[in-house]
Image 1 (spheres, rainbow, N blue to C red):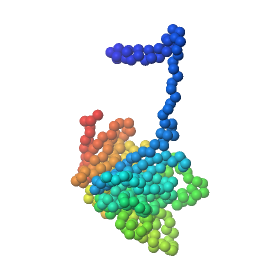
Image 2 (cartoon, rainbow, N blue to C red; image 1 turned 90 degrees about the vertical axis):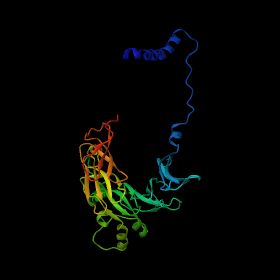
Image 3 (cartoon, rainbow, N blue to C red; image 1 turned 180 degrees about the vertical axis):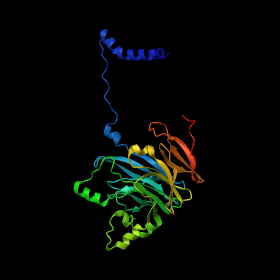
Image 4 (cartoon, one colour; image 1 turned 135 degrees about the vertical axis):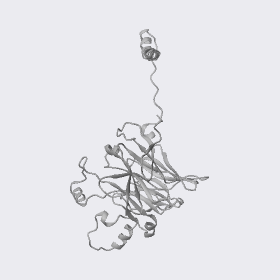
Length: 343
């Protein structure tokens, strides 16, 4: 039956290719016309089209901050900037970072601030800007920058993912020989920190990590050391250790815990070993939640705070299989796959 079903299609294909040859063989005076010249936009014009994405609705539902993307041919890069649209008004550009990009916009829960990341020469840092416009102010000044952040439900804190600093000896080697990496051996883990937003704003300076985390503390007092300690007071570490690296993370509805996924190291092949844990924000105590073969990642809290919804390989580490959605009680126990009956 399959052969018969394909026969008409094969005949059409054959005729389409054979027809020009038959016409020529019969001595037709006319030849196939030359294809018309392409009159559409060229490659550069297509790449130059401006795009938009990543829309975020304000807490009161009256505004949307979004990202625009355009090609910067002079600097051979794509530039991203934040725009804001309000109901009944023309959209306007919110950020202007010459030579750099602004992205990952996130509203504060009270709608008073828009946080975003921008690399203005010192790694990707968190910045704050008013939705009414004006100058953005830096919130963090972390060596090598931050990886990701999320507001706490009350807006007083942020969970921030930061990659561990380079070893001081390694930094000296790189200063001499340039940057290098030993394949499958050189890993720097990413961990969770909590940032006191109000303390950082009150200090009127970007927050740095504590001195013991930067490797700059040589035990000698220097001029301005007190100011540096004040700026570092806003950060507090939540997770630590070189045996895992943090991926996605989210606050609980009551702001007391953070669910996160983690894997042994940043390598792509370690994705199949991703597990879920919860860290208590007050005590920094980490509790393992889901640990089974295969990837378990991207945790989301239920509105009640009693369940965690997550993506799972359902115990199978094979990367090519479809993932499922599952839920697990925050107190632990067996997870329940919710999509096993779906194709």
